[in-house]
Amino acid sequence: MMTDFALPGALLYALLPEITLALGAMILLLVSAWGGEASNPTRRTTRFAIGIVGVTAVSVIFAWIRGDGGTLDGRLAGDGFRYAMDLILLLGTAGSLALLDTEQARTRAYQAEVPVLMLLALIGMMFLTAARDLMFLFIGLELMSIAVYVLAGVNRSSARSAEASLKYFLLGAFSSGFLLYGIALLYGAAGDTRLASIAAAQVGPIYLLGVALLLVGMAFKVAAVPFHLWTPDVYDGAPSPITAFMAACVKSAAFAMLLRVMVEGLTPAVEHWHPVIWWLAAATMVVGNVVALAQPNIKRMLAYSGIAHSGYLLVAVLTNSPAATAAVVFYLLAYTLATLGAFAVLGIVSEGAERPTTIDDLAGLWHVRPHLAAAMAVCLLAFLGFPLAGGAGFFAKWYVLQAALAAPAPLTVLVVILVLASVVSAGYYLTAIASMFNRPRGDRAPMPVQTPALSAAVLLVSVVTLLALGVMPTPAARWAQNGHMGVAPATFVTSASAQPAM
Image (cartoon, rainbow, N blue to C red):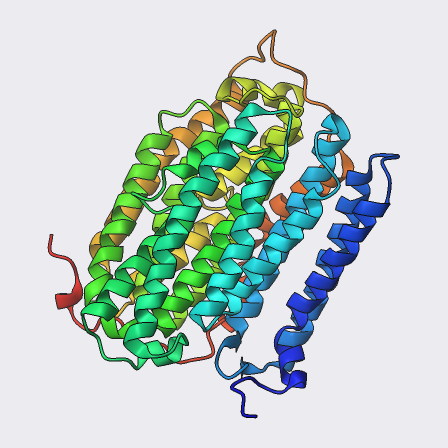
């Protein structure tokens, strides 16, 4: 009997990292079920999960060195972009697990299955980085999403956590409907769900409607305006380690999905969707930064900051060039490191309290825990894109700007909006920094605990790497350049006529 799929050996190599991670997650699930309730089993499974992430990282590096290029009859990628994004996702997951271990030691609020859910979500994310078929994409997206819906509400003693989970589930299910209808229409137009076949299809009304619905679903996942309304509530209500996981990993996986679909699948309709994403990028940068100015709650401020960063990344997606792909990889690496560092500090300052952490809680932090204030300042300046003190954050935005200006039709207006939006973001980043260094510590403000070992490791790796890449970005930039897609991207925009009218 004939089959479209590759031989089992090729399939094994194509899915080696995912298989490794899935086996580890299943073993960990059995350990969590049979391990009993003694001696805080969640911390034990969390540390095992960090080990599984490390083993998976080794398998990713092995697969990258082996270098398939394309696998499973064009349905899965085996290119550098997939494996570079996988390593970023593994880094973000390991850091989030370390923060979970710290919070569990203080609160004992989480069950032993929580690390397993994080690994299952990670499997879905890794499918998203590899998918060259819309069915594989949908499977990965749902595996990631369902696990993250549950993770947002894992703190059973918190009403805010339950509310965040419910909101995320309802809105996420709604967006998945748009995505699935879009996939169905594109299948009807192209006769196949592979991106290569969709890229070769004739553009017609059904095709364009499918593109529109697919774009709505993906815009929700990357938190682009106006599909961003779930983000601040979910980020604020979810436990801090889970928020860090969502901010770093879910965003990275969603942009990997968006970039691959646009570059490899939807080039025939570029004249139709390019102006739409142009306006999405502009609105996302402006709305995210302006609304963040009014947020005293640090997690909500970082949520709107993350929305603004989605706008910056959409600018890179629009340029569609090898430089843009490398810029996205480098940007997400820097963003992941800054996110992990910032949430590590928030977890220590909040001491696992149910109430929101505000800018007032950071007041005078320099006077009582100077290393925490310095680390938080580096992470916030990295988000801002400040040179030297912001480390890799400056070069992350710089590479996006370079790619946008070097596009076949330079995105000059978007570049101006990006720069002005970054200036606006200084208002809330510098306010938080000034509060830590210039304001006195309030009498009622809790004294931050001594930094736990795993949180200290997350802070050290994040801050040192950010600062090192701010001085010597070349090694990471070359690594990001090696994370190119395995197909030559078509030119999205060849003339200014594809630019939206201003």
